[in-house]
Picture 1 (cartoon, helix red, strand yellow):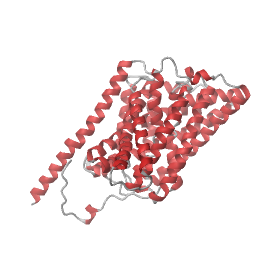
Picture 2 (picture 1 turned 135 degrees about the vertical axis):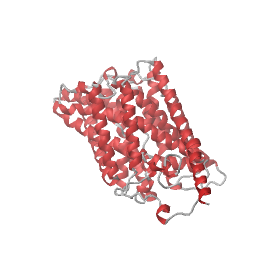
Picture 3 (picture 1 turned 90 degrees about the horizontal axis):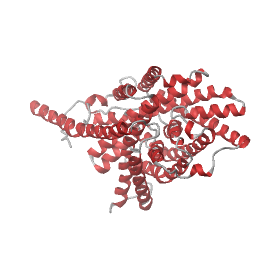
Length: 482
């Protein structure tokens, strides 16, 4: 760990960057819904059949519920900006905190591009019939993704007082889109029945592709920790966070199971596209009930929802390099706050630039569908690493002889920690099994193992090499001044 030396400074230098507390109770509930309930992961999961419904239920009980307990408990014990970064740092030490935060941030460098691609795949339906093929056009998909990403960055640099409304409208769009999807599914079911049978919910003979779904499901259920990453921007977090976590979790879990079942009823798993499966389902059901006009408005609502998802994860994950810049493990300019808008603008811009580069690199090597799946799978691995620390922290705190209750008792924390840790470990391991959209097993495994090692190696470099060199320069400056 770098040696910190305190030197005399002016009051202006001592003053920490000030962030504005602009997130209220319902801002948090809507943030959780738009961050957790991501319709863009449902098609890639539903494409593996009815057995995935059981995986949803298992994950909700053994991963999602423990996640809510962990977020509430750790936020009570360690409030402040940074969330998963701060919690791992306080419980396990500086390097583990940095690695947790680093993986949380870099996963979103992969995940945000998948949201952009999903936006493109859905938004073409707003243009009407005959334009759906644009989603598979690399030039169009790349251009539209970059434009949307740039817009989200600008709005979040202006501030969460503006950016939170993108999240809020995205959550409202999510509710309406899910209501239309599930409502049409119920109408089709009552009027025409369904071809789905009990056999569709059984484990297939070759479960290889289904195994990948478990990791993606766990990934789809993360997000309750997102608000705590912005802990210094919440109005009275100790009072309003627990209730917001509970409401956001319940709503998201119900919406996920309902959306997956509806997709299975409406579209055969062989015909589900990972980018357009939701709109395909609505289009198919709307034609059957004589309401094809509903597709374009639905695509618009879903596009608003996707933009909100992108904004929420872009804004939240950018707080990690911001805090790391303040801690001297990354360049200090990443910790800068915009003079006018009081936002971590440098971290937001860096995040967007790296995401753009990843989009371009992957487009040169694969098609749109495979690019989406590869980016999503690596994002799953990196996203779940902080949850190993989060659940491990519950076990360490509850097993301590000096344990004191903050929100939950020792037995609850032990169960939540053990259940979450086992489920998270399985989710990481199983996502290394390729999804059905992957055409080359070798390139997929190289991408997954190589990408994981690369990002973990970069974390070690910034912490042990960059951080220590920076500490040494500070010592030299103190010696020269003396």
